[in-house]
Image (cartoon, rainbow, N blue to C red):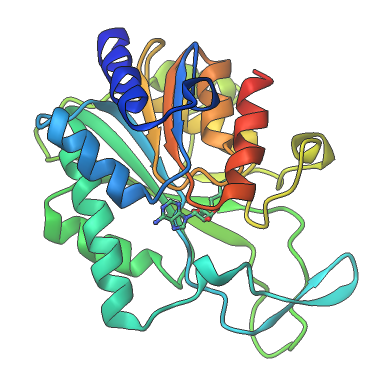
Length: 271
Ligand SMILES: C[S@@+](CC[C@H](N)C(=O)[O-])C[C@H]1O[C@@H](n2cnc3c(N)ncnc32)[C@H](O)[C@@H]1O
């Protein structure tokens, strides 16, 4: 893992003049389009190099609707990056990055992909088309969700994580005992109650769809080993990287937005 990480660092150095901005002890992060970066890494690592991938892609839910935040009516729009481009274009984009992730995963590696009903069925369909074998459908339940303002359907209070390996025969990592110990010595179920990130996790800045550190810690502790190399193509504020570094893993991530990239870099350097 360390040697693969060192090669990634050398490759990053070839593309970036200010190496210290992008590469630190155990991480290499790119302020670039993830697809461009993944194609470049694949050129040099045709057999894959990542032990685990966590992908929290645009959910395509910025449709001009409204939600409730701190008692106020606010737009659901997260930014231009989260707008649907129509089903055909969304499908093409999702297919391309999911295929690149497949190629970049090591034979026994696993991938986690997050979503809601806006994107997760697309992910499930494409995963099966590409050849992934789905291991679990995790439901992340938010204990205190914002109320539904329209009162015309149920309050949204969950997100989904699909956890998959490259094929049925692959020998994936699952730390069953660690998960059981974290769950009062009972088997960990596939419904996880975790609160959204609080103020402390946003101390260095805010991202509109920041994931809680506890969620990433669970995925990483369940499905990877110390010294593994973890990749996040859509790192946003860098939560995956923070959890990876805190648990002794190497991290590689991409974020195309400069402001979010700087936030991620600050959070990662603080580790
Ligand atoms: C759902 S957010 C990720 C949030 C992240 N998990 C966190 O905890 O902060 C998705 C991120 O992907 C970025 N993004 C969208 N398309 C991208 C692309 N093609 N390449 C790299 N980043 C992209 C967006 O700018 C956004 O910050």
